[in-house]
Image 1 (cartoon, one colour):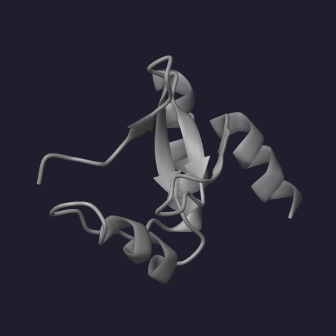
Image 2 (tube, rainbow, N blue to C red):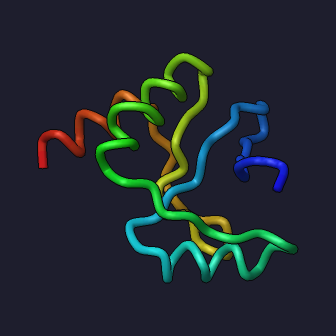
Length: 85
């Protein structure tokens, strides 16, 4: 109800967590109180979300796990990687 969930590192840099499939997202959000996952189309992700995160100075937390593992990348790096595939 209050927006999207963000994570941050020890320096306060915010990252938007993303997963390749909803079942992985649900495994993480079920461990948080009152959180739900949502699907974002690849087109919206590339055209709206990544440019917005670049403008906001945020990063992307790719495939975080319930125990806190994952990788954090810049939105431009993720865009380039996705387009290369």
